[in-house]
Length: 324
Ligand SMILES: NC(=O)c1ccc[n+]([C@@H]2O[C@H](COP(=O)([O-])OP(=O)(O)OC[C@H]3O[C@@H](n4cnc5c(N)ncnc54)[C@H](OP(=O)(O)O)[C@@H]3O)[C@@H](O)[C@H]2O)c1
Image (tube, rainbow, N blue to C red; front, top):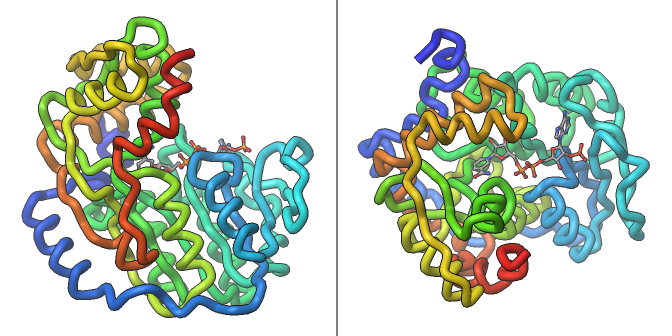
């Protein structure tokens, strides 16, 4: 691993099995149930609002009667809807748009894919949140980040949030189900194949709609303040099982191809990802292949009160995406 890659990725998804066992026990112990939902309408900022998690989160917050300020690089293109205001938020301009935090009660942050220095992108927002004494700061990172060394950018950001003095939550989702109709969809549409270096490893994929439900609960509740949660689906399945489920849902025979890390990286670079991010993806895929993405934890149900969405339901809801 190059020094640069190591700097960014070491420990990001360094899910040691022992850590997972401890984590699972902590999650069972630490989840008393659904949070204290605030009754009043709140003002909430969502960074990365047009993304996989962001879109679903906005829908849920608006449906709950909250006022949403949605961050995007192109706020002028955002869909018009009552209760929704689009504002500028751009990872390559980390100091721009921060003033929206003066208007809101709580805020949700992701780091956009393609960028490996999550601390530089989001710390200005955290500093602004501290300056305006935001009531709640919710950050999404990824499963396993807590095991990264303190200088790794995502972990450095997590530690800054935890010591900010603000009320906070950190959510760390496993690999998204949605990757199969976004990142990996072109192979399915072109060749009826899922190309991924996952081997026979099981993965407790999570539906991004569940991540959004968790985030919506945490943003509007104080009950679980100052805790971090791993988020997974309710079952761990292999990529071969994924292919079977997509085949059953579409009626088209879709198969899985366990490609080499080199071919995986070449595909990512071909799709336009920067070299360091492509290397990072190869690294975390290697961790998945070692079985480190298999643990199932109960946090979606304990926070939202609902069972996680199953892969079968995800496949049924999105079948059109694989039919072209
Ligand atoms: N996919 C997975 O399996 C997985 C698993 C665990 C954790 N994660 C984490 O999830 C995060 C991504 O979440 P997501 O899938 O919801 O995001 P996403 O759909 O990939 O993208 C979110 C939004 O980021 C915005 N964006 C892109 N470049 C940007 C930039 N330069 N500045 C500001 N915004 C930019 C885009 O919005 P605009 O075009 O409107 O600006 C995009 O809609 C990453 O941090 C990743 O590490 C992903």
